[in-house]
Length: 367
Image (cartoon, rainbow, N blue to C red; front, side, top):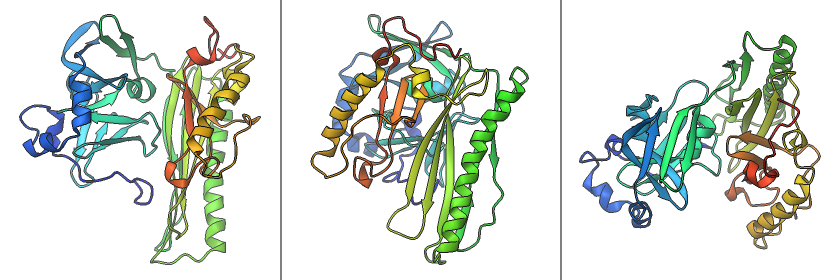
């Protein structure tokens, strides 16, 4: 995790946070956010079921979000959980998507393979919890919420029968510049060879563009050993079901200034033919989706700007940047488009229920 982009916050708690019992230091209990503790304890415990079995662990609801204890993922679901004392970070999951969690006395910070989105808020109330949506979107776990019974039912997702491997582009680093550029490549016996080739070409070409741009900046710049340049990226698989694959590619460049620049790009493919899908392909069941999104995004962005003097949102771009998760569609804009750098990458998630008519299915005609 790069020192310029992965700002985790203050010191991590002792590893006893996962146990959620006497192992949690008293000093932590006293220092933890009173607001967070009250938000969790005022809500009845959430029953968790896994493969039809009720687990001893309970979830909580915080600000309307159903939170699952990380210890339950480890002990009952068999999801790997480890702690790196040197990096002061928990790792949850394995394979191409891993959650990295750092928790202070009152906050917990989560990313997937170094990628932070605005739906990744862990919580602390004597235990470490993560949102149910993270399980659905990145850890291959389906989750059904029954509000009447206050029960969440978990099961393994039926993922596409493909293999996803991380590849790294060869590049020479030195004391003045560092390159760490990777990209996903897919394979599978059930894949159409032409579709597989088309998808892999797009993803590799993205990575090659990062490397080429980095080398050009190095040639034109004045990198020093005191302020070395840095070009790297991360990726996460956001959706891998129903013959659809959605990938988040996040690129980072640092050239000796006050801070680096981060760019997030979504790619959504049909595995049947390798087609790179546009937002209109995902939301084909609603011919009026643009009208709704343009109006809602304008309200959200106007409120976000609060008179900061950035550009005004008018309408979605013809090739609008987005990615898909089980939670819905996330619309992505660039740094500085509509907000100051400190805000981060502006992105807005809409559920399919918001975007499609009742009974309407995403990816109509694509699957």
